[in-house]
Length: 455
Image (cartoon, rainbow, N blue to C red):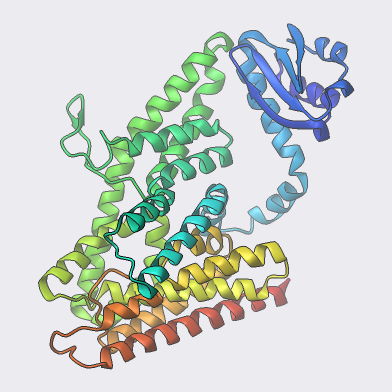
């Protein structure tokens, strides 16, 4: 059977504008349509491989038997390509001009796009909760705080599920594969558990919650596996063998290879930052300020937590990572606000403003995942602002006594331990906020306007 010609014939009869969504079961292709009476079922029955047609409500059920998986994959891909013809042409015309880094950012942006509503919503909840804690007598130990915080944390804790879905859809495989992989990584019997092994092969204990990189790489492996085996498996066995092989290979490769790779990269990054900090302290803060946003995007920022905790436990304050993060978060927020300032679309502007304000309160994920990952100029602007803010934090020897960032971080700068006994430390914090915020905003405006002038 020629799946391509069958899919084209189906599309010619059903009409692209009439299709709502496409699914399938073991033997039937199910096409949910807007007006089922417009479809000539006799023409559908004449298409190669069609064993029967059933109308049920707004769904046209086309029986293909064991060939349904191949028809579904090709028909769905054809449908998706048709409804985004203009976009595809634009992407094709620029693809050759994009370097590997730009292509990687484009893939990340598409993979994260479905998560945007959740990330923005829970980010706002967290920001509002932080304001309430500062402005009222509500305690962080109160049941109300714990409940609302748990709701907000869920949005980021289950990030592998959302990213798994988005990346699988972007790579044209069943999105359920990505969701499943994310669920496996978050399973309490795997997530952060030590001592696991597979036939004697050790599985490095890795915490996958709040991360994106492991599931992204795992879904890429799944997509390549699917592409490799699809034409090699007979139609009668596709329904069973393809999901079995794709899930098995993708899951085990992620647990055995991707997880440890993330740990290794995180450890190398941490060692590099510590080395530079020991040699040239202020430069290390500038480097962290520039790159910390990327560590949040990939989830490798968790490798930096032990350094922060150790510093807080030993001295009661930190003069390295937490102050650098302050500049980063403010610059990310103001870069997002700069995008909103230049945006003409009212809906997009509203989303960008809410993400930027949330960022000022120390919650950077809505800005990163919802705005900056789709806008390279704004991302670079935030890096510039973060780097400058980090350098200023290093030069002024800014200290913070808790892992809190954004404007609420000002409360963590009131330190009573020598040499931080006056208000000079808070003044340094205000300086970092002002400088990194201004730099992030202005750098983004400059970069975006320069790009516009070249178009």
